[in-house]
Image (cartoon, rainbow, N blue to C red; front, side):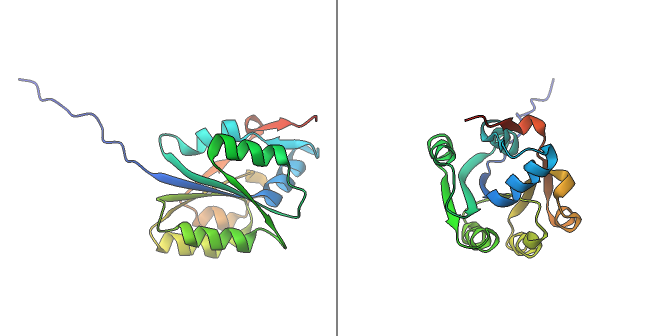
Length: 163
């Protein structure tokens, strides 16, 4: 008599993706030595999520020159939003992350900035899985040490903007 083995249990997780737009853009420009390289969210987001569900994506960027096409695409494809920041994204992103901590299972921060180390520690103490996605070459080692998981952003996650 053979034993019936049930299918593996899928853990359902809700994930928030918070993007430090300035940090990612600068990292991509430095990696490629070009100013017209953009992140392709249509390939990156599915890779970050795997089988998990997207709760929301929020793109934070200093300044008012945020691409309306990017904002439209994030809204349409991911029910996302864009938040213009007065002076840097780290404080608004950190505030939003702490607000979301009890509503999601995991938070993915798109940034390699060491300024997020204390945020990562705090979120983990609240029981939130914290993942970092960034250009490996420009990601602070201390941030990598604190995060639960790291996803390197590579050439395959980018495209050259020509419009």
